[in-house]
Image (cartoon, protein in one colour):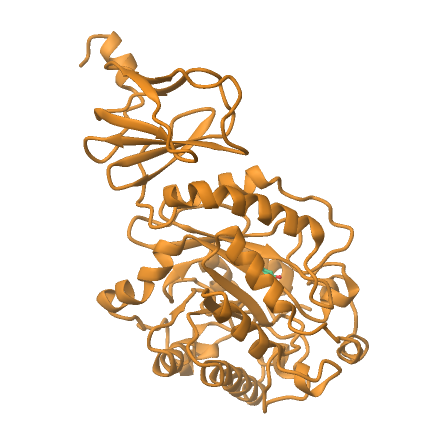
Length: 449
Ligand code: GLC
């Protein structure tokens, strides 16, 4: 499918990743009647209030689940295999999940140390997992016969986690989903349809903590009436936080959403890296490119160090079962988080980065050195500009001996084999906010300091 500039959806998505502004400028239809770039913003103070829990939470579970889970070949299967709507929509007659699979997901998330969850209420395929008056193409009125968003929300709350709803603006099923770009009557219908669904989600399930928009193809903020969309959302859910994806230029909303990569936003801007556990968001039976649990933890640490959150995905099968490998990975992560999660929840941005076998996080004056390649009896940290007051192994609380000089701190008397797995964390209490000067050693040797 291409628009009048000859751009396909795929081109558009690729460009969104590379440079949203360029994409928006070249592909957006002319909706000047709806005004230029919106000036919508919540006050900074209100944002701090709404986002406090989220900044402390650090770790969440993404769930991609829909009709594509039946085919088990990635959530883009409809587009990637060119399946016509009339054929694809038949899947709705076969989607009959087992009772309350969301309970398993929520228990798994809590065990893994996650504090919130975000589930696809409608992905690009257009099938609604929630009860809606806007279409019959929804779980309660098809084979499933029940409101799967309701089950999910109840399950998440039962585990004491925060509730996030993902919602795709792009819709491959709705007859106006692409036409809206060129045809004003179609745009009006489709935007009303979209806003009505969001209103239902924001009205029918009690307090919702996160609204996670996705893919604003093929309209711009004016076309989607994104400012009005967010105003409606905040009117119904005053404590909610929303991401930036109902704006192709990604300037609206409360947080940035780097995808499949860890990339900190500028200081003071909130961000969350979302990532698959293999290479697919939706269930993909043959995708065996699983991340090692150690990699998942390292990613989480990298996010926390730079002030971000980490949202890692599961793609349940059509009946709602979580692929066994995902369960194993998250259980391993959870066992580690039980002992070491204190180093990440509520973490502050952390300046030290330099090491080839460890990464860092920080809370106040405590620096956490997360050793992923254990060097043996001595672990050295270069260029720490603070005095170390004490050090201990976070998992066991055992004291660690250390020697500190101007150049480095050496933690000594440690076991040859890593005392914790898959990562060993040393909590280093400093006399102030830990700072590392990577050039100090060389400058001092040259007599420059
Ligand atoms: C992309 C994909 C989509 C996935 C999302 C998660 O936008 O199109 O399938 O849901 O990323 O961030």
